[in-house]
Image (cartoon, rainbow, N blue to C red; front, side):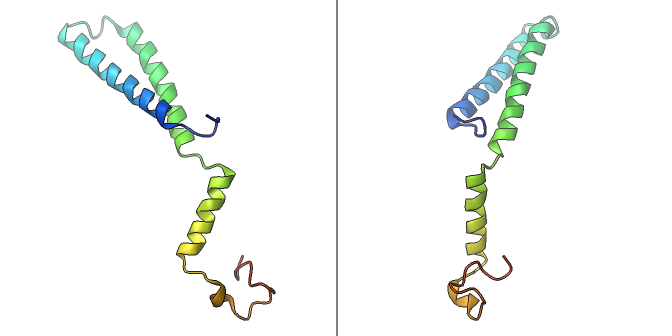
Length: 99
Protein backbone atom coordinates (compact mmCIF):
# COMPACT_ATOMS: atom_id res chain seq x y z
CA UNK A 1 0.00 0.00 0.00
CA UNK A 2 1.29 3.45 -0.82
CA UNK A 3 1.04 6.34 1.62
CA UNK A 4 -1.56 8.05 -0.57
CA UNK A 5 -4.16 5.30 -0.61
CA UNK A 6 -6.18 3.32 1.91
CA UNK A 7 -6.65 -0.26 0.78
CA UNK A 8 -9.86 -2.28 1.36
CA UNK A 9 -8.20 -4.61 3.88
CA UNK A 10 -7.12 -1.70 6.05
CA UNK A 11 -10.60 -0.20 5.79
CA UNK A 12 -12.10 -3.48 7.00
CA UNK A 13 -9.66 -3.53 9.95
CA UNK A 14 -10.81 -0.01 10.85
CA UNK A 15 -14.46 -1.07 10.67
CA UNK A 16 -13.61 -4.03 12.93
CA UNK A 17 -11.92 -1.68 15.43
CA UNK A 18 -15.09 0.41 15.55
CA UNK A 19 -17.29 -2.67 16.02
CA UNK A 20 -15.05 -3.93 18.82
CA UNK A 21 -15.19 -0.56 20.57
CA UNK A 22 -18.98 -0.57 20.31
CA UNK A 23 -19.15 -4.07 21.83
CA UNK A 24 -16.74 -3.08 24.58
CA UNK A 25 -18.76 0.01 25.44
CA UNK A 26 -21.99 -1.98 25.61
CA UNK A 27 -20.38 -4.67 27.78
CA UNK A 28 -18.83 -2.17 30.18
CA UNK A 29 -22.11 -0.29 30.42
CA UNK A 30 -24.05 -3.48 31.15
CA UNK A 31 -21.53 -4.38 33.87
CA UNK A 32 -21.69 -0.86 35.36
CA UNK A 33 -17.97 -0.29 34.67
CA UNK A 34 -18.17 2.24 31.86
CA UNK A 35 -16.40 5.04 33.73
CA UNK A 36 -14.09 2.70 35.65
CA UNK A 37 -12.31 1.84 32.39
CA UNK A 38 -11.81 5.45 31.26
CA UNK A 39 -8.02 5.22 30.78
CA UNK A 40 -8.28 2.16 28.52
CA UNK A 41 -11.18 3.68 26.63
CA UNK A 42 -9.23 6.89 26.04
CA UNK A 43 -6.34 4.90 24.56
CA UNK A 44 -8.69 2.93 22.33
CA UNK A 45 -10.50 6.10 21.25
CA UNK A 46 -7.18 7.77 20.45
CA UNK A 47 -6.04 4.86 18.30
CA UNK A 48 -9.36 4.72 16.46
CA UNK A 49 -9.46 8.49 16.01
CA UNK A 50 -5.99 8.44 14.44
CA UNK A 51 -6.95 5.63 12.09
CA UNK A 52 -10.23 7.34 11.16
CA UNK A 53 -8.27 10.48 10.30
CA UNK A 54 -5.88 8.48 8.10
CA UNK A 55 -8.85 6.86 6.41
CA UNK A 56 -10.56 10.18 5.72
CA UNK A 57 -7.41 11.80 4.34
CA UNK A 58 -6.20 8.86 2.26
CA UNK A 59 -9.59 7.60 1.17
CA UNK A 60 -10.38 10.96 -0.40
CA UNK A 61 -6.86 11.57 -1.78
CA UNK A 62 -6.42 11.57 -5.54
CA UNK A 63 -3.02 10.71 -6.91
CA UNK A 64 -1.97 12.82 -9.89
CA UNK A 65 -2.79 9.86 -12.15
CA UNK A 66 -6.30 9.51 -10.72
CA UNK A 67 -6.85 13.28 -10.93
CA UNK A 68 -5.88 13.19 -14.62
CA UNK A 69 -8.26 10.28 -15.24
CA UNK A 70 -11.07 12.22 -13.54
CA UNK A 71 -10.30 15.23 -15.76
CA UNK A 72 -10.42 13.10 -18.91
CA UNK A 73 -13.70 11.50 -17.89
CA UNK A 74 -15.08 14.93 -17.00
CA UNK A 75 -14.13 16.29 -20.42
CA UNK A 76 -15.69 13.29 -22.12
CA UNK A 77 -18.89 13.54 -20.11
CA UNK A 78 -19.30 17.16 -21.21
CA UNK A 79 -19.77 15.98 -24.76
CA UNK A 80 -16.45 16.99 -26.35
CA UNK A 81 -15.68 15.30 -29.61
CA UNK A 82 -13.06 15.94 -32.31
CA UNK A 83 -15.82 17.00 -34.73
CA UNK A 84 -16.96 19.72 -32.33
CA UNK A 85 -13.58 21.38 -32.70
CA UNK A 86 -13.68 21.96 -36.49
CA UNK A 87 -12.02 25.22 -37.42
CA UNK A 88 -9.70 25.18 -34.44
CA UNK A 89 -6.26 26.65 -35.11
CA UNK A 90 -4.60 23.47 -33.83
CA UNK A 91 -3.61 21.11 -36.64
CA UNK A 92 -4.95 17.97 -35.01
CA UNK A 93 -7.83 19.52 -33.06
CA UNK A 94 -6.14 18.92 -29.75
CA UNK A 95 -6.37 20.28 -27.14
CA UNK A 96 -10.03 21.21 -27.22
CA UNK A 97 -10.78 24.92 -27.39
CA UNK A 98 -10.42 26.68 -24.07
CA UNK A 99 -7.77 24.32 -22.75
